[in-house]
Image (tube, rainbow, N blue to C red; front, side):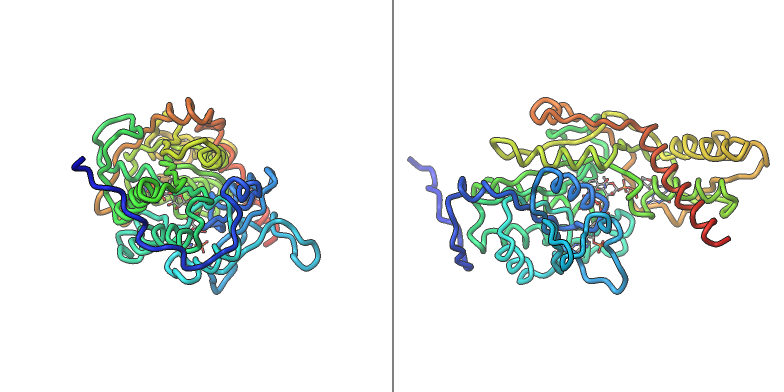
Amino acid sequence: SGSIPDVPAPFSPLVKLNLPSPEEYRKRKVALVSGITGQDGSYLTELLLEKGYEVHGIMRRASSFNTSRLHHLYADQHERPNKFKLHYGDLSDSTNLVYIIAQVQPTEVYNLGAQSHVKVSFEMAEYTGDVDGLGTLRLLDAIRTCGLDKHVRFYQASTSELYGKVVESPQSETTPFYPRSPYGVAKLYSYWITVNYREAYGMFACNGILFNHESPRRGRTFVTRKISRAAADISLGKQSCLYLGNLDAKRDWGHARDYVEGMWRMLQQPTPDDFVLATGETHPVLSITSTVLPFVIRWRGSGVDEEGIDTKTGKVVVKVDTRYFRPAEVDLLLGNPAKAERVLGWKRKVDFESLVKEMVEADLKAAKSLVEDQN
Ligand code: NDP
Ligand code: GDR
């Protein structure tokens, strides 16, 4: 007595699909991935295709190709029909999302699409809020509009940027959030709307709170890839100096391939929940330069000391450019993946040194073949 009774959902499905029961429906394995053209989208697609899923991706129309990370997966549909399809779409376009969901009828939806650059989010704050915050709401509502809220399992790409200012370390699922950028604030909205739709409508919706993860497919303006590319170019004499911003920030860096497996595992659990994926180790930005540059420059027959000076030539190869500083910085990220390890049986396989080595080797190979092509 005195408690407020549950009220029915505000609207019933607008799109009437002829659906079997949720149990029957989930016997198919059909995944829909937003952000499929990005780093994580490409690794996740590989994993899902290997597991026998039919994979559908939402890609933005661009004036130049934005599918380079997927070329190896995308067979010509006319010649060789396969289980991989791309759909034009955008997280800012609700009608388009409803149409794609109704057409694909996915069993799992992975929301990876985002304006994912923290520094850029200070320059494009409203757009970032629209896509990274409201975009998640649009996708969740598209699922409900099609009456699929009890049929679909939903993954939200949440982030360690939610922690922002250090409240406690290491950070876990119970650490309070304190985002420090428009990106982090937009992702905070997405985190909570995912929790809210789980609680309000019984949706199987999970947040993966992922710490930084990198790979040779990492976007070129993120710090690890910027360093690995510069290291390759410096070693070939194509670049003399690398300009970076805050060298003191510390991050918990893992390999993207390990992390997409954790995403998939979250959606295979009996009940939906939120999980941190991290390595449990942290390194300052400067330590990547001092790990990477000696590795490459040694190959050229010299070394780099901790100040970023080429010890053979005496030239400074790493300089700070304040243009890369952020109006508010996240100083320290260090994750505690204990819950994911215990419940999901997930553990990162690639350590920091192997990640850095793989990235530098890939960039060196690419830079060398470019030089050979030009000769
Ligand atoms: P990327 O920047 O490599 O990929 C982002 C993807 O989102 C791209 O496919 C991009 O398309 C797409 N996208 C951008 N804007 C829109 C839009 N308006 N509508 C639809 N799609 C859009 O990011 P990652 O692969 O590294 O990260 C995947 C997700 O995980 C992101 O949400 C990111 O914020 C989050 N995350 C990433 C972490 C990391 O360390 N990598 C850590 C924690 C969370 P296009 O190719 O056309 O630009
Ligand atoms: P981050 O990644 O902001 O953690 O977000 P990024 O690689 O951009 O920066 C990491 C740290 O390096 C410092 N830094 C620089 N960063 C960039 N990009 N360029 C520089 O020249 C530079 N110099 C120093 C930054 O100040 C920062 O402290 C990434 C994204 O993938 C997000 O989408 C994701 O949510 C988080 O990781 C977890």
